[in-house]
Amino acid sequence: MTEKKRTTIILFSGDYDKAMAAYIIANGAAAYDHEVTIFHTFWGLNALRKDEQVTVKKGFMEKMFAKMMPRGADKMGLSNMNFAGFGPKMIKGVMKKHNAVPLPDLIEMAQDQDIKLVACTMTMDLLGLHQEELLDGIEYAGVAAYLADAEDGKVNLFI
Amino acid sequence: MNVKQVLDVKGIACPMPIVKTKKAIRQLETGEVLEIHATDKGAKNDLTAWAKSGGHELLEHIEENDVLKFWIKKG
Image (cartoon, rainbow over all chains, first blue to last red; front, side, top):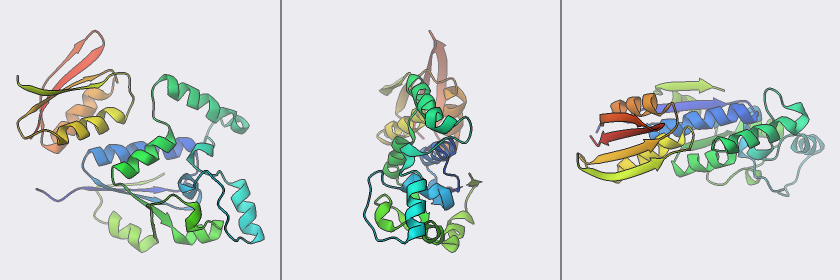
């Protein structure tokens, strides 16, 4: 058995469509028998937020950020044609028609396929996100851990 | 051809055909054949590349009434 190939993706964007592209590639790579890591930083962290409200102690700025950012993958907007929230509704309708997999399901599938989901702890602090607010079963790390995975990666993407 | 299992991924979109194919082929023994039915137009290139990368053999593929059929032998 040859050593497994590795794919790493940095998800920086908090847009529904971009996150969907990242998760489709990640799930495809896992089906390719790659070991896959998705490193979520800045707005990409919102893809990992639980959709229910979690009570944690927050400062004023942290509360503002928490309110303004989408709570979970399903609430994220589009990078194009968002139309103040109408765009995501339209695209979800079209996706249903074409049997494309919605983003929350892609994330669940990624966890099923043992894709390593990592939250960047530095940007979690900046945006005031706490571990309790993010999905269970993910990892917490910084740039060095990402680079350790990426340096022997065959595929490295920044989305 | 000794087809061990038939996988129906008709009507479902990328990346599901490849994810399901991987799951199905994991259940097979080396040398056994998986038959796949798909309608995703990307499936031909996807499955060809996937089989090659994974060391499996794409024995045959045909298009029949808009359904793409593949036979992959597990390597």
